[in-house]
Length: 385
View (cartoon, rainbow, N blue to C red):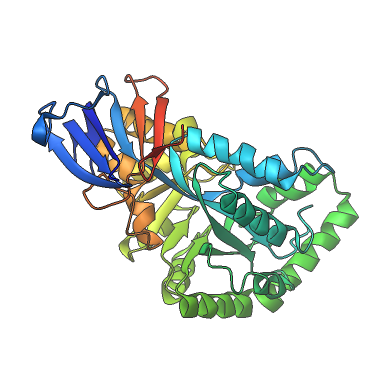
């Protein structure tokens, strides 16, 4: 039996324009888009969207939000299934229909997780999906600390996991990428963790040595594995032209959080999707003092937004961009959270309002300058919010 849903009197956010009209969903896919008229073939009327926006389902490539539900306080871990469900509800209510949950691999002495915990999270996500507990579709983004001695051992736990859709190559050692100055490193590690001068000095020397010993060979090894398995690669915190050239050589698809305009421009020119944080757009600045994402948008080199640590920012940021950056239209801003991320990780069946694609979408009410309201979310034509 055919299942059909008709949504009329909507502002449809397409890849290149916003048009008023009707969208028809049939058996989990988008069947028709009819600009203008309130009726479609056969005189069918459908549900009145009251002039609200219809956006494609958002696609989130980088969020560590699940970690905050699993470990809500130092020394406290939560039931994994409950943590995943809490995370999933907030993701879906933000208009996100496909999410890549970040799992950290490699011991980086950041007070992180034990070996096996990330695999347990992945297994729990798969079990929750099998039990039909989830509203959004959950894939995995493996964040690999290439300077960690054990990162390859951790990665091996995911050797046959077909949920892995993205692997990022990171090096958080002092003097690298995000931490090009010791002032930044002191603030993030010594101050944050309350380390003594002697302990901090030993920590810095140990991390530098690990980076010198392992980073290059681990980066090359992981890149080769991912290319062999058809998994998209992301760089992380590229700061210089040398970093970008290295990433290009590894066939990187996504340049996550470049820390300089030079790196962002070069990454974009090289064909990588430049990803920045949606909270950066909403707040108007980076939480870590790096380049504002709006500057990249104004320069025409911002391609993808990620909610990072605030899921709702992914639906909020496109409207902020369209309202406040004259050179960015709403259609272009929405593509940064839908069509563009879908393309970079090879999800060609979703990301746009176009006949034949998955019927993943959200209904959003928004007035200029105000916070958007998500009124409905559908995944493959089924209402989940």
